Length: 224
Image (cartoon, rainbow, N blue to C red; front, side):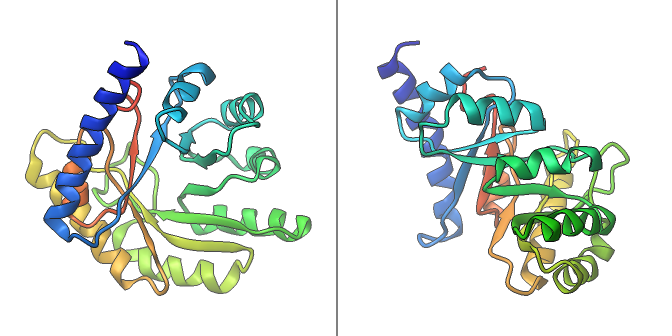
């Protein structure tokens, strides 16, 4: 696919985002984070050239490598993967724009210690396991608001910006929609929250219609 064909392809993806956004409100803004975990730095450059600026990785080492290879470009780097405690310092070395997967109070407390020692802050989203699936990380919905407030109170070096969730793993659109609605309801209850990150390549339109204002698109952005 040449550059012109690729731009037409991406324009079509953006048109789908726009159509979903307008069903919510003309004033509803949706940010796209291109998940580049299966893509090369050259593929990221190609997408950058047609306007995409925010990228997400789910492994700290991959994020470090690509951020270094593309350090001349004004990119936002988001970390969207499960963070192991022994990788915290490695992540903080990269200074990510946003950490999407703060999935427990325990992890927040470990992050706080490291951030305080470095005299730095980190913008993050609380991950919610809205579908209550054993295969997913995240705080259970009934504990989410309390955990959110506790992190804000106990971990001043973490700037909680909102919430994140992954839609229910189901063929039933109604079940997926319910998981998004659960996350959005929690988002509305969290004091000062401005980001509701939900929706991926297979379900982003439904996520937007349920209130998402940040979507994480991987395969569809890189035509894979």
